Length: 384
Image (cartoon, rainbow, N blue to C red):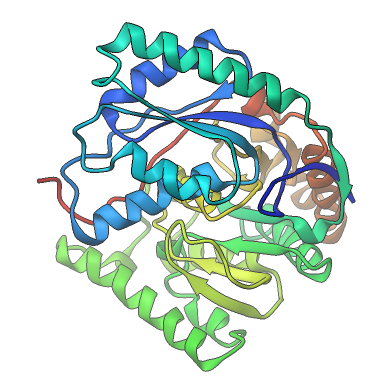
């Protein structure tokens, strides 16, 4: 059980944010200024929102919408410029269908930045006060969607933190919740293991389809992604190939059946283990899972990273003890005790599961304390 916030659409949040949502890069600085003025608000800087077409436009729109719909958000002030492709009013109308408080502020309609900040801050301040009156209630773990990812992996990732997160994934699924596996490019070479656990033939086909597409995108850039490890840090950390990295990354999925494979920033339609088709880039995959409804994210790392989210608490899990000690400002859990021979995968997994319940009930993660509000959308098309 954990203590969370029931939303009008029936979903449950673990945070109670008022989101200042800029739908265009031109509005991100004004949104940031509003968050500086009004305690209880969050926002993010991004480079998107205009001159996007087709599937790329739709994916970005879906991401904006999913971020606003995330259960950790009480209400949204959608902030636009006025002439952009991704219209603030269109985003607000879709979010409002959930029953959440939603307001639109346009820089052009308000006559410039200063008046926009003033009006946006007034609206946000009232929304924050209303949000503060909402009390936490007790809910079962079945209400949770947990995102999982790894970044800055090393030779210990597939031996300690990732298997421990896999155990957590199984515990979440057993409790009736949902665990999201992401990072399609970091599952290349291990796709057959997940296909063998797919719940139906359609999901099997999708597994091989998204892997083929990921490899195809690399080939279009003149690179065979299977020929080596994609980052120098991974190699320095002791990983010899992409397949080796993928075998370690796939252990985050645990042993549960794969229920479905969803597109980037798409909200799962089934409970249980779900694969989201995301790139391997840490911030983009994190944003996609949060837009898909993840209230909490588990992030394993062997090299170390400060990554966080403006919307969802990110629990940072180190794969080895030396890095946990050297980057203690950023790490929440040390799975290096498995490598040290002091604890088992199951013991650390149970500790992380209990930590999820604590964080879901209000305990702050290191990335939240440090205001590490990272945000990036996976672009799949050119800018025109």
